[in-house]
Length: 131
Image (cartoon, rainbow, N blue to C red; front, side, top):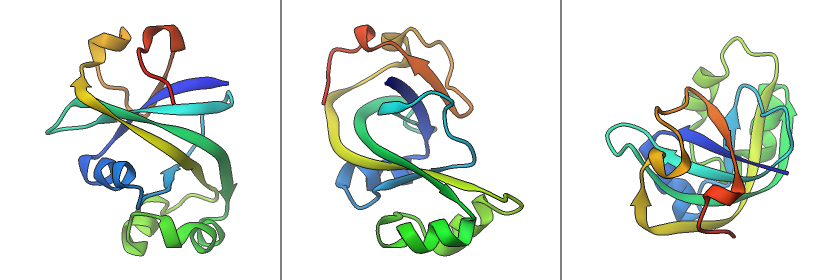
């Protein structure tokens, strides 16, 4: 199982860290099985703030996935629809235990030099924390 670093907007990072957002939606999932997501909060924070366990991945037609996940979506239906507009398949990581770092980290702590557009695989041996 792999660990990935995801770029996530700060408004959604806050929801993930609080436990109210239990699904991270994506147009495509990583090709390798993922067990953990390291969370990079995008502009204006631009810091790695924590990590979250991945319990499973889901995919299906956007309307069906919304019905399955809406209770803990952490996003309004309108933003969800806009994000998946034109997509035949919607995907999501179902999130589990969250670890918020006591001190935010920089991408350089993970040997990453610029924020990924979507995600990047990272090695567990780089990380100091585990869930």
